[in-house]
Every structure is written in structure tokens, then in C-alpha cells.
Image 1 (spheres, rainbow, N blue to C red):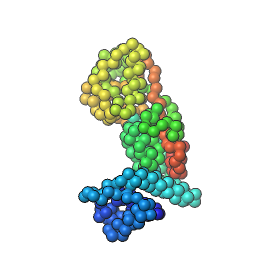
Image 2: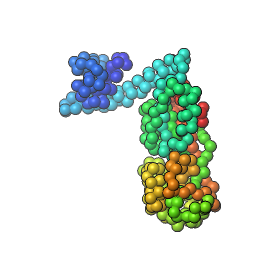
Image 3: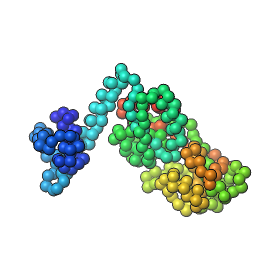
Image 4: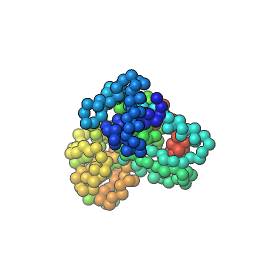
Length: 293
């Protein structure tokens, strides 16, 4: 069995049909069918259940698919590593970022592109679980995220480069306060309808905010838990409620109907970091981009 056959197998597993898989591979259907039969004969197992209209993987096929995806990714990384020994930095750098950290990227990307104009970027946005899964599948090389990193895998499999912490600020509709006001107390915020960032799987920022209210002996009036930074900002801009966000978040949302206030009686920070897999080869582009931080 060789890499070519593994690519054929994965194409059929993805498409569920020999015809569509052959088309995606730019080959005829009969040779593809023969290659699959040769694989099954060599392994001594049935890889696909052919009883229905769509080919489905058997238990053996599922195991091979998971291993084949990893093998092909490692093979591509090996080729890339060997080529980079003598070539300049170029190609596509795929990275992930949570929305609340997007403001950390533009300046670094601009500076990076000045040094390495041959590199283009592919940026994936999502929560920790989605990006963690993409990292494990090796479709991205690193993630810019709030810490702790709340992915499904154990934390010991990640390298984390911690960046300077980011203070929380109050974000309110601009019409709720005097234009010249610069700060607000936690007690005043507790009287406002509040919006918090929380998903079924990532709760870190929500807990940081609610814990801070508890430390002041206050119960916040939370009217909405949102899974999206952009949704919360839109609701604040519409005058629905207020929120507490790390200060750097607001650099990506310069909206006139929103006002940012310092916290007069609280000083809590959000930790930020770059996350990547310990057991993965990092491309030269990725290593150089991490150096930008």
C-alpha cells in the first residue's frame, strides 16, 4: 500500500461514491474501483459497506481513515520541512484566532509581510473547541486565543506562548452616561442589563466576569449569554445592554454608539497566548510569525 492508494481511499470515504470520488481525483472509475479492491485484498478486511446507495465505512475503514489522514498530513509536513531547508519562506500560513483576539493580528501580519512577502495567510475564526479540533487535524498551525485554552484535548499536548495580559473594561451604549465620563464602578454595572460571552463548551470569560461581581458582593443582572463577540457588540450598540470585555477587543469594533469605560474599583485581566501542538512540525513561516509576538 502506498500514499497514492491512501488518497484514493480517503476520496471515496469523503464522497461516498466511486463515481464522485473518481471525478474529484481526475481519474476513471474502473481503475479507482480496482485500487480499492487491491487495498482490501492486501489488508484482508472489508473497508466499505456496499449494501446501500452510498458507500459507508466499516469499523476497519473508520480506523484506516483516521490513521490515513494523520499519515498524509505527516507526509506533507515532512516534504515541506525538507524543502524549507534550502528554500526561502513562502506558501500559505494557516492560523486560527478567536474573535476577541483578532485585534492582535493586523500589525503583526503587516510587519511579517514586509519581511516575507512570499507568504499568504489563511485565517480560521472560531471558539476554542472548533479551533482545537482544526489544530489536531493539522489544518491550522497555531491559534491566538484567550487563556486558559478550553479545548477537548489535554492541555499538556500544547505549547503556549503567553502574551501580555489585557485589562477588562466596561462597554456600554454611549447614551447611557455623560460624554466626558472615563470610569464606572462594579456596583453601577450590576444595575445595568448585562451581556456575557459564553458557549456550551467555553465558559472562561463568562466566569471571569461573574466571579468579579461575586468578589464585590454583587449579583449581575445578566439578560443574555451570547456565543459571539460580534453579536454582543451589536446588542450594546443597539442599547440592549452593557458588557465587560478585554480592552483589546474594542480595537476591532470602533463604533460611535458604544463607549468604553475603565473599571474604577476592579483590576482584573484577561490572559492571551499563542497555542500550537507539541508533537507537530511547525513550518518556518509559523516559527517566524510566532517570533513577531
